[in-house]
Amino acid sequence: MIPARLKFSGKDLKVLDQRLLPDRIHYLTARNAKDTAAAIKDMALRGAPLIGCAAADGFALEMRRLKPSSADELMLAAVRTADLLKAARPTAVALFYAADRMLETARAFAAANPGKFAPATRARFQKLIEKEARLVTSEDEAACLAMGEFGARLLPKRCVIMTHCNAGALATMGIGTAVGVITAAHKKGKIKHAYSCETRPYLQGARLTIWELMREGVPSELLTDNMAAHIIKTCGVNAIVVGADRIAANGDTANKIGTYGLAVIARYHKVPFYVAAPTPTIDLKARDGDAIVIEERSCEEVTFVKGQRIAPKKVRVRHPAFDVTPAGLITAIITERGVIAPVSRAAVKKHLA
Ligand code: MRU
Image 1 (cartoon, helix red, strand yellow):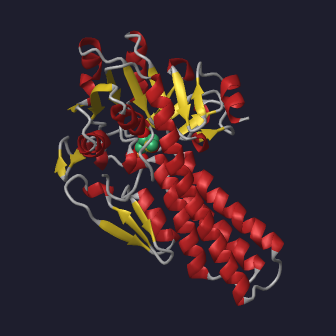
Image 2 (tube, helix red, strand yellow):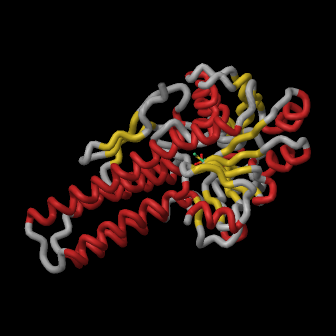
């Protein structure tokens, strides 16, 4: 079992601090939207769907703290809270989806309850907003299970599979997206072997994914990222599955840096390349991958490993945290609704209709 990632009590949110994994299981406490945004920004929690679930919880906590006493006050607080949460990280659209969904719930309540709020009205609002936050989480859990089923069906028997970054239970409130496909297929006896790329510079594959695969009993090995091409060529890899932070309307997919390179290698070796992501990851406002904002993170995450400097002082560094895989390199996108294949603007549109 993977430890609970988020524990929402109504009064606070306990966040499993993923920066300490796999060595320590430690929870930090978020009491409001600011704490929640900080936990997202500082990577105490990460992974697109989990960021969305946390944002919904953080929104609910902030509403409880602010206790708006009129519809106008509520709207002011709701807009500010959504903006604060959305500023935490720029690429994963799940964050924007969840914050906007909570904002819309607040907006609808304010429109239906104009003027001053009686204590009972305030209580009704808080109940409603917490219910919406719970829905964001339960929908994510259900989506993960469905993706696991659809994805497992696509894989051949005795599948040798590779994944990148962490799109596992630790990145969601359910069994994970890409790793959920692997563990679901493993339960059906379909996985011969799984490879996890370590995912420089933040090492989500080495710290989190391989830990999850080991805990789930999946036969697996860890690779450094630069071993991927060699292993694909020589070890019979017959599927690659990754998660996504944002999928544009034409199917171009932003995911952890290194995903694009893996997709190019997969195409060269004729290995199917799958993306597993719930439908809120699809951003129809992004016409194609060029419209997706790529987060640039700190140089220290590249030049230091566990507090140890590994490059010269004052070195100039780049750290784009994500890249975009063109739709043409993706064999299929697996969502909770089914499979998009081949991937095209029309197919994405039809899938969401
Ligand atoms: O920077 P991170 O760790 O939040 O990046 C995570 C990823 O890129 C995942 O692959 C993606 O969010 C999908 S998670 C189901």
